[in-house]
Amino acid sequence: MEMNELRAILTGAARGIGAATARLLAKGGGRVMVTDVLDEEGMALVRELGPNAVYQRLDVSDAQGWQATVEAAEAAFGPVNALFNNAGILSFGGVTDCAPEEFRRVLAVNLEGVFLGMRAVVLSMRRAGGGTIVNVSSTAGLQGYGGLAAYVSSKWGVRGLTKAAALDLAPDRIRVVSLHPGPIRTPMTDGVSDEIAATQPIPRFGETEEVARMARFLFTEATYSTGSEFVVDGGAVTGQVLPLPQS
Image (tube, rainbow, N blue to C red; front, side, top):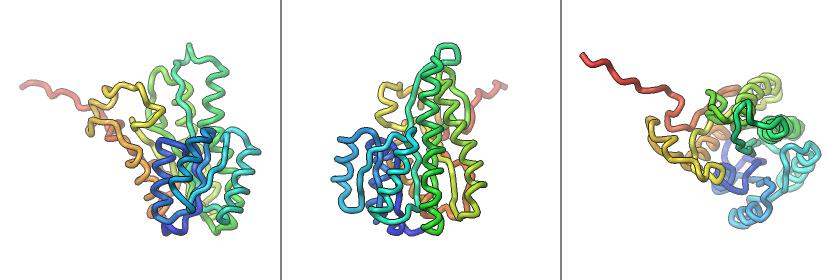
């Protein structure tokens, strides 16, 4: 699909990876609906992007809010053919110290929000003749991390849900893939030590624009991929370099 043919809804798009992706798609001529609960930042981004962008407040855990968002997107630029399911929250706590209500809160945003978004856009994508859904997971959807029980659970769930949806929606010419960023410099990772990336093959935090470029590729070029994982992590999950024995 050409960039200027994209009619996209992006969640969690007021800042971070979502905002960087909205900028890249709009710059290429795509029509984008920026959604978030951070109204001031979201509206400021839309003013920056100009006529190719509109803003809609959306709590991704609210099914009725999703329905209103899709209707607003269709009114603004026609049937939706791209969905960037990016909204997410990070919560620290292991199995024994994560409160059940906090566990459910993280899953409501990070996993149920992805489910509700896909469910909401299907009819619109059918009217568009097909489309692409990019679900943002994490390297935490590829491996475990201690002290992040809810977050890891939600991101593994996104990975599995992506595969199920890819099979379900293939007859509608809808591709569904998961995107797995590693340590990326965003407001959500403020305060996380740089040391977390120091032992990676690429020993630094990634930038939001680097993830956005992968998202653009998935929407416009990855036409033979569905149900697949795409990793942007500086090699973080590639493996571990072990010291060689001394001869």
